[in-house]
Amino acid sequence: MSFPLAQPQLDAIANACRRHHVARMDVFGSVLRSDYRPGESDIDLLVEFLPLDSGSLYKAYFALLNDLRLGLASRVDLVMADSVRNPYVKQSIEASKQQIYAA
Image (cartoon, rainbow, N blue to C red):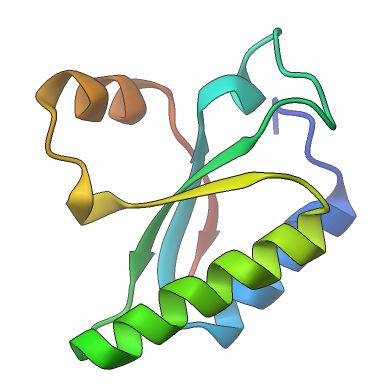
């Protein structure tokens, strides 16, 4: 992969995804660019969950976010794929994202 996430970080992501009903996760943003600074830059993640009722989705989102922050020892921005409404932001994410997990 062409971004600076080490295998232990990728393993932590995959484990968290399995625990919290994730269908797919992509990385996007500064972590994919040369200006990424470990420890300073946040890690932007785009998530799609398996079908869940709204209460379970709420719990899964926040439990996943907590696990990722602990497992990656970094600031994490977790964006649900279906919540991106701005067409310019959506186009930018779609153009640069790289898949890091699929159920």
